[in-house]
Length: 101
Image (cartoon, rainbow, N blue to C red; front, side, top):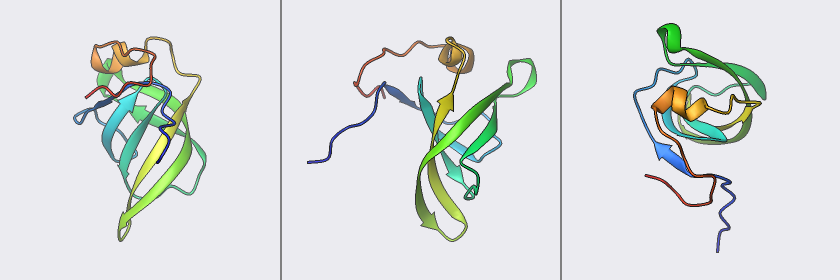
């Protein structure tokens, strides 16, 4: 049986612009992006656009190859603002292991 290591709920969400690729889901601790592979472990990601645009430090924690030149990558936020999800999605997620869909 596979153990769930997720520390917080997540929202399956598309529509927020992300410079790393197509945003798949976001949680209070990180995000999953589908796009080209990144060679750096610690990078800056731009989420959103206009005055609401956020520049966040993220650390790559896992990569799953999908097909040629495309992968799904999990990133953990490094020192995110406490109101990150409110600023991105307008919602608050519980700090639990429950999956929010």
